[in-house]
Amino acid sequence: MKTLIMSANYAAARACVSARVEVVAAYPITPATTVPEQVAWLNEEGIYKGEFIRVESEHSAMFACIGASSTGARAFTATSSNGLLLMDEALHWAAAARLPIVLANINRSVSPSWNIHVTHDDSMSKRDTGWIQFYVASVDEFYHTVIQAFRLAEDERVLMPVMVNADGFVLSHTLSTFDYLEPEEVDKFLPPYKPPHWVMDPDNPVSHGNIVFPEFYQEFRYKMHEGNKNALMVYDEIEREYKKLFGKYFGGPIDCYKCEDAEVIFTSQGTVGSEAKDAIDELREEGYKVGNARIRMVRPFPVEKVRELASKVKAFASFDRSVSYGFGGPVANDIRASLYHTEHRPMVKSYIGGLGGRDITVTDIKEIILDTVKAVESGELGPEETWHDLR
Image (cartoon, rainbow, N blue to C red; front, side):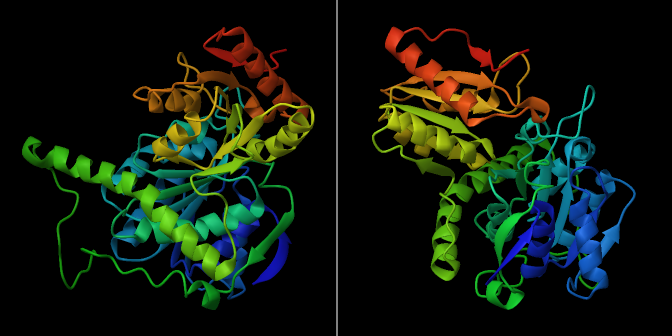
């Protein structure tokens, strides 16, 4: 292991080297462009030894990965925003075909009106494709989660593709340290991919993806659902092993900070969850019993972990950097749904902000948490969601 200083995008490209990815297919889109750009450079320098396929669109990129994975190759791609949306048909195909592809999505606003800064709407709109979804808070976490994602996706109990999301520009275009692992080190954790059931092979022709009539279609979807749910248990095993081998642990599906005695917990996804730790420290010094729960895994949703946290608190201040239009914050509503059958149901206050890259500061996070504290004291929930810092 050695420490390097790079952007999250360059670190993701290095993860392809470490994980011995056999096929990368990609089409450039800001702010994800430098992921395939770096893979191409590594390929020409002989550092990345797999195949790099230059395609004509993001739709083609995902279907190239589908073709590669269908032959038993380890496959990866990267995209952002409208590029992810263009992949939509292929995202459903990859999940339904149970192909362990890993996708690095650099979160960015969707047009129009648009810019090239972070919003989580692109990936949140794909929660029901079947893809497992992670949201990371640092360059180091991005690099290691991509490696872990291959192990998770390829586990026979899961066999589902994985999307690892990183905030555009906040991580993709800023430099930070990460601990790089040589491929020989990663081999101890991630063996070569061996498809458990079938591969497309001209010497052994098989039919895959044909029409399934109503008698059996539902069974296929049930298996996808079970594989997704199994990911929570399997990822716990993976992280424990990863920590033992490399000393890296990012908190499991939910990274909790000072939640043990908290009465109000702030939840979020991505880099805001890292900033929130400073807000929690300051509020603790001011006498407030508050904690921070950074939700790393949004699909499958960590229902039991949320319920465990809920059993000890009075309220959640749930921050979303995305919108389920007409229904509010998507993760806030996932938290509410998770608590429906529990005896103790704390208040869940929903906050939406930081859209299009608008800065969310420690002061903003403190204001959100204190607003929830006041709601607890008054017993009044207020609006279904609060749009933070509307001009």
